[in-house]
Image 1 (cartoon, rainbow, N blue to C red):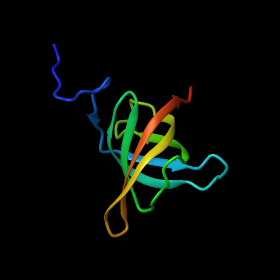
Image 2 (spheres, rainbow, N blue to C red):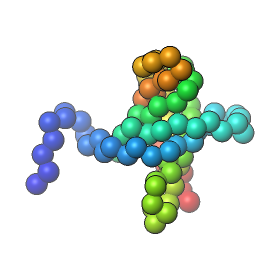
Image 3 (cartoon, rainbow, N blue to C red):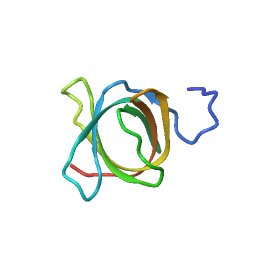
Length: 99
């Protein structure tokens, strides 16, 4: 049986892989690096601050080609500058795009 010290519905898994994201009404694609992901959220690093409440389409690109990319619809719930030019973005997963 798996045990977790977290009081969450879903366990966070460290991912450390590349992600891309875009805003719903834009074709501009931005890059980031995932920190962790769970069944309900994602935490990633990027070079820009993103306001809370903003919707994003996030593509998680696993390092192994055996696993296909996951495309999720995310609402930003926190944006924190952790050092100059680097922001930690927390997002709530609202849905997964079917392939």
